[in-house]
Image 1 (cartoon, rainbow, N blue to C red):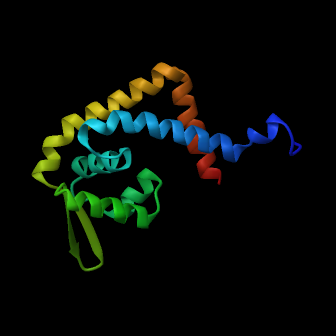
Image 2: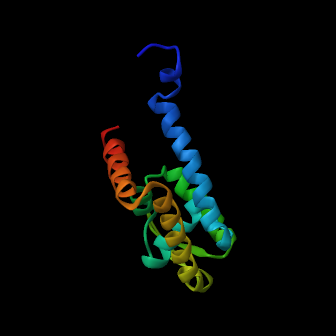
Length: 140
């Protein structure tokens, strides 16, 4: 590939970032109704679904850095949605009653986001894209 023309602008780096920005915008519109970012929303759903989950499991599932998970948890603590309990070297994260009452609305946000991107990309192409992106992430 040469460094001139439209091919240069369509390299993996810029294409991946353009897709990420567009998906973020679409996700933010779906999660707006709970006043949480998509990352906070997904994290909170996992904590509600798996009370006592450890941050390392959240790192693995959400493919985020440990420091990012810590910052997200701290923000959810500020909003009184989660609590941390540490026993020795192990920290467990628990949802508050407030978080548990949000669970149905969080699910609605998730479904809305899924339906929005499937309406644009198609269900099969969306599933294939997610699978391909996860496979590529594993390789990198």
